[in-house]
Length: 397
Image (cartoon, rainbow, N blue to C red; front, side, top):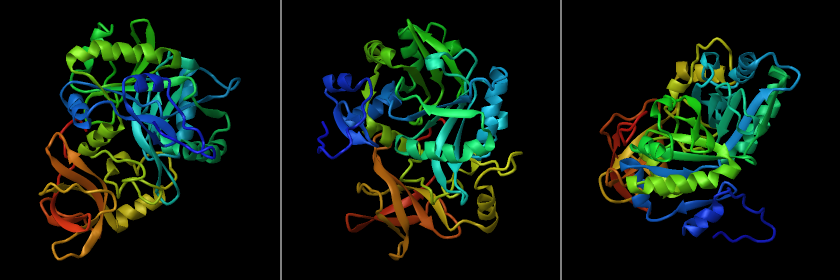
């Protein structure tokens, strides 16, 4: 349990907090929320997700609903396109290609091309009724929700005055079911037609027993799976049913610690580590997520175009340690002569690969060649490492 002084803001909790406590989870503060760090051993939770299935409470994520104001709409699809058109000038992806049920990973960018947050935008399917959801859902990082809301308040009114936005964390919860046996788990809890599952980066309303959910084929582990949006009053019975029916299939509840090692193996960036307002998607190796030739101009486009033309001064790389030393954020990366190259942003011991791994930024006009020998200064001692291909773990991209 987390302790706090009278002066501190009380931590936000999810509707599953008491269930996590009852299950013996270690709870910690994360981005203003009280969240489970682990339920059992981190390695067991990690490998369960890789080999069977893991269940995550991710209700702390920022859940933002965007729609056309009442009295201004002209129909579902027209309203959805109005919202997407308003957002299109704020992100590097081409939102004109979205249609009902499709989702896209992208970034809200500032004028310098820096990342305000990495987000997923969902063009909701018609007939999604959870908390009167319709038109567009935006999911952002918990630590960045207020920054995203502030940015939307600055930008959207001048682009489309009829678009409104609100967070729905007070009525909806979000679970992630990830791993190679996730479809078997869903079948066990009542989804008899797995052909109804959305394709990757699509979403669809589903009925799991008596519970209505919006299933999105997205995740943050490097495994296939779904994220399940559900009403607060339904999340506890859904969580309990998934745990009960999934346990014989190898499912475990998973906390933040294993979620971090899973995403690190998949080389997925974390805001505050690989991403921030001074780093661009190009520097983070996410150039595929920026369409510089999209029809709609967007905030930060000129800066990114200049960076692409003129070259970048830093690059994100993946490192594999050749000894058992575990890199930590801000550990220095050096060449073999001891010259500073940059620093680590994320590091862990990889349970899947049985070796320490890390991501980090190096300074210079070009990234290092695969196989290049470097050193990471771990707790004051230079430890050998080499540059490897991204991602470390070869799951779905």
